[in-house]
Image 1 (cartoon, rainbow, N blue to C red):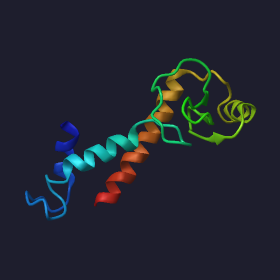
Image 2 (image 1 turned 120 degrees about the vertical axis):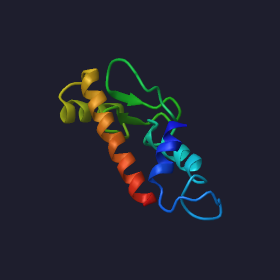
Image 3 (image 1 turned 30 degrees about the vertical axis):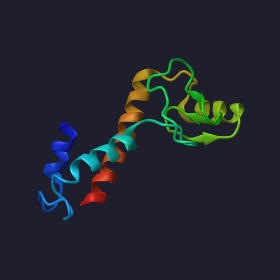
Image 4 (image 1 turned 90 degrees about the vertical axis):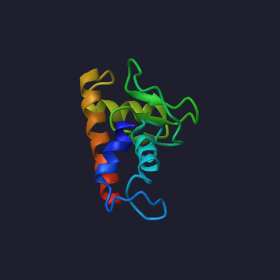
Amino acid sequence: RPLEQMLEKLLPRPTDDPALPGGGAEAPRLAQQLLLRVTISCPWCAAVVDPDPDGCRAMRCGVCGFYYCWLCFHKELTNQAIHRHVRDAHGDLFVAQRAVDLAHGAWRRSVVSDFMRGIE
């Protein structure tokens, strides 16, 4: 509900008429869309993944079986390729959780910013 209240304040042309764009009538739908966009999911199949995995940052999706980087969501077709990417791009396979949190925070801010520009 706090997300809906924030969106109600930001939407153009506030109105209680659900037939008109903007306002309180759209806030619940937009809040749901935004939550879906900031939920971490497999970049291949969009399956929701464990938000706090331990260990190596080279990931394999449990649904589709493809490989991706836990920090930047870069995709690769093979186990070897994703491990090489993580080492080369991020310096280590076992990147500290603080670095992951910073990377995911930046990614979420970008997603929210793009989303908000889209409803203006």
